[in-house]
Every structure is written in C-alpha cells, then in structure tokens.
Length: 147
Image 1: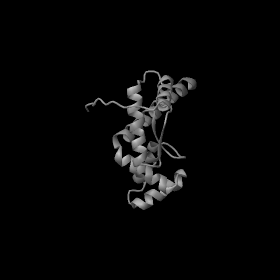
Image 2: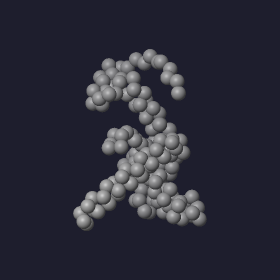
Image 3: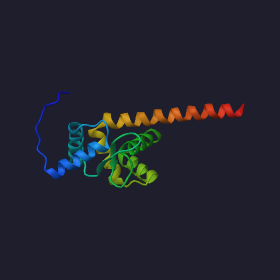
Image 4: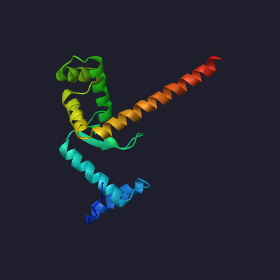
C-alpha cells in the first residue's frame, strides 16, 4: 500500500484533542493517529453499530453496547460448525440466544466481518493462540503440583 501525503488543517480545538490523544498513546505520531481515527470514523459511518475501543488485545471494533466483533464472529463460526444444516437465519437466532446479543447487532458484526475479514480473522486467531498458551501453561502447572 502506498501512502499519499496530504495536508490537513485542523481547528485549534480538534488539534488540541489530537495532540492529547497522541500524548496518551506513546509511540503514536500525529499522522498515524489522524490516519487511524479518520479510518475508524469512516468505518463507523459505513457500519453505524460499530465503535472502536482500546483493550488488552489492542484497538479493535466493538458493537455499540456489546462485545467485540471478533467475539460474535467466533460464536457465529462455532454455531455454523455445530449446526451445519442450519439456515443463516437459524444460525443468527442461535448466536443471538446463546450470547444475549440481539439479532441486529449480530448482523452488524457479520456485515463488519464481511468488509474487514482479514482483521477479524486475525483477532480470532490471536485469541485462539492465547487460549491455547493459557491451557498449556495450566496443564504444566497442574502437572507439577500433581507430582
């Protein structure tokens, strides 16, 4: 991907908030923060039920008032794997019932996943690896205590 230089003029109040954001996120430049925040704003315009939050796994897409998008998509994949004969509507209902996330929010997560598949799939893979490492660590610790 090539990066095209661009000149942007910010209102003083916006620039002040942007500088405060950069100061609170060491290692982030004004340019990188501007790019990220504009990208997120555009994504939120395209997907109004999606917001972005910082967390232990980094900055990621969340459903408004709900879980991270990757968590819902992992549940969708699990439901599809458990019930391969279900229709899309039945999978949606199963995920909604089992997670407590409303059908429209599950659909919003699926729409975001369709637009940003690589990003969501990477978060799911990262979570699976973290869980696997945690399980192996627990098994080693448990084995040591059993001796």
